[in-house]
Length: 222
Image 1: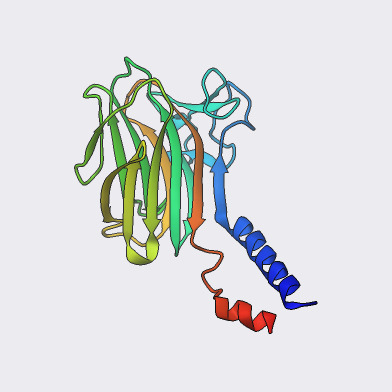
Image 2: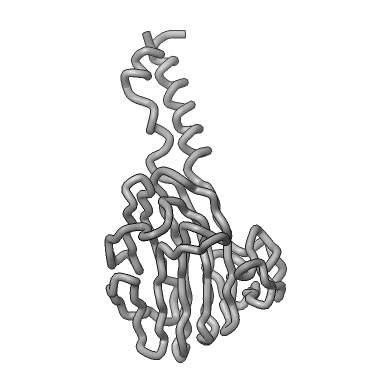
């Protein structure tokens, strides 16, 4: 095998590794039956495993065909993770209809269920028409369309960056009084009217080439 073919082989292998390592978790809610409760499906459970805090699958509105999840006034639904190091990106898309009322929350925790510790809490206050972070940054809620919420998480640096609809909102510590881990995503309603989430994803970034250098590739080619 000549050096060119070795180079192509190595690069192809790295692309396969990158693909395999990039996506850790995602849920577009399309594999669940419309009308069913989310509790007990796809790793989701009500807070402290209580089905009373359920959310519900709907096919009347979605970003990706066919379903989304409806967060009703009693919802407090959790997806658990076990990430302890590295760089991550959480994305999720929300739809808040005009005329919505009350408070809804997009929450991430660094400890759960034992001694829960909150790392992120974005409050959607439909009465005020704004969303706000723990650090006090605010943006106007965009109604009647799917809008991306994105969180960049740097566990090794204890840092997070928050974006709404592509607009940077805030950079802050990932945790205070907790641990540099990702333990859970929590979609919670504090009595607010129904809103919708779709296409949630937690992806590890900057992984595939972390321990690979062009020096290593050169060694393979020699």
